Image (cartoon, rainbow, N blue to C red; front, side, top):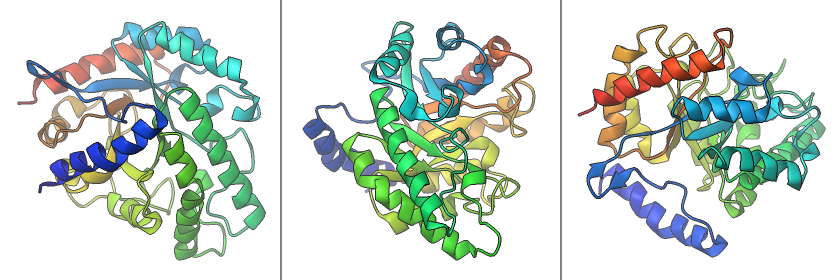
Amino acid sequence: MSNIKRRKFLKTSGLLLGAAALGKVPMHCGQQSASGWDGFKYAMCNESMMDRPWADQCQVIADAGYTGVEIAPFTLVEKGVSELTASDRKNLLSEMQSRNLECVGLHWLLSPPPEGLHFTTPDDEVRSRTVDYLDQLVDFCADLNGEVMIFGSPGQRSTVEGQSLESAMQNFADGLARVADHAAERNVKVLVEPLSSDQTNVVNTLGEAMKIVNMVDHPAIQTMFDFHNTVDETEPMDELIHEYIENMYHVQIQEMDGTYLGTGDAVTEFVPAFQAFKDVGYDGWISLEVFDFEPGGEKIAEESMEVLQTLESKVT
């Protein structure tokens, strides 16, 4: 059985049963129609417009042609997600749904506020408080109908002075294990994101991300693919996709320098990766995440969408 067939079998057995028991649909809705492949699903991360009202952010994203929103929680709160009431969460969801947008999930999970969080520190009190906040984020994500939480947060997972990498990795896995059952109950997956070594020394490649995934050994803990964060990999992007797709539940995209699509070589360089995602049957989201907000939300959204459509048009 091929990797993708095995993954689909798992999704249509254990994962579907779990979703059915919770009265929810499965994680991936797929991109197949009676006429064949319908293309990829595109979302946009919201932090490039964090200074604008939530309704405006959603409108810009929808107007540019995206159908999903990926949320950085720190952009919506002053102290933490616990301040967002049930009514607040319904309003956030309503603004998305009124524009035919879905909530993809969350990223920048531990970026402050709140202050003082660290997931891998030897300090038991800080680590426990951080794990508790991740638990709160699971509920926030699920309340918005989001299904993935991208665990990047380099500053909150890197080793602290005097700490070994082995200790940090073990604490990373232990913390994820503590929230895994709760995440599964809420139909949420926490995805370990490989980050470049100039951001953190804890998990720089997909192989290292899989070490954490295997240490936890729980279906709610998986990994994802970020174009910008492949600089420490030794294999081409398309080969990485074929190798790790079975555990890959989300994709983030931007130019390799973190700017919006169209400012660099993505329109040509990313074609093999897009072809690989098509070939393996990837049916999750591809989310635009940029780190230079200066051009403004409309420009970032619209010009990046043009590149995404061009890339998809080159897929055979």
